[in-house]
Length: 202
Image (cartoon, rainbow, N blue to C red; front, side, top):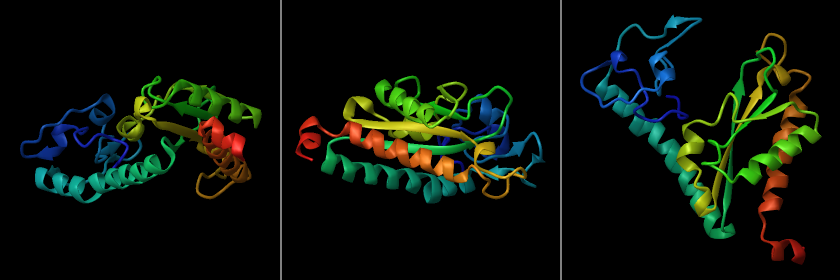
C-alpha cells in the first residue's frame, strides 16, 4: 500500500471485479495506492489484484494509518489549539532540481507563511529550496491539512543524493545535515506557532 495515495487512486485495469476507481495520471502509470508497475522493473505482480484483496489492504493498512495520524492530531489540537504535520519523503536526484521541495498543496494544506518560513530556515542552512514545484504535496497532507481549522500539513521532499551514499543504499556524508534540517524546521515552526502570550511567559 502507498498511504500517500487516495484509496481509490488505482488503475482499474489491474483489478479483477468491479471497483469504483478514480485514477490519477500516476496511478495510470502504475503508481497508485497499490503500485502495479514501474518504468524500471515493469510489472510487479504475477496476477491482477482482486477487489476483495484491495479492500482488505485498505481496511487493514491504509485506513488505520490515516486514523492513527488523525487521532494524534486530535490530541495535539486539544492540548495546543493547532497542529503541524511534517510529511517527509525522498525524491530522486535530477539535474537542476532543488534539494528540498516544500509542498502545501498551493496553500490548501498549510498557511502559506509556514511554507515561507520553512523555506527561509532551509535556505539559511544552505539548502536549495523550491515550493510546490515539482511536488505540491500528496494525499497525506491533502487529507490531514485543514489550515482554516488550525491543522497545517507540509510535505518535505528531500533529494536522496543529499543524505545517501553514491549507491543510494546507506547513509552518506550528508545524512546528519538532512536530519538537522528536519529537526530545525520542526522546532522553529513549532515555536513560531505558539501563542504570543506563551512565548512572553517563557
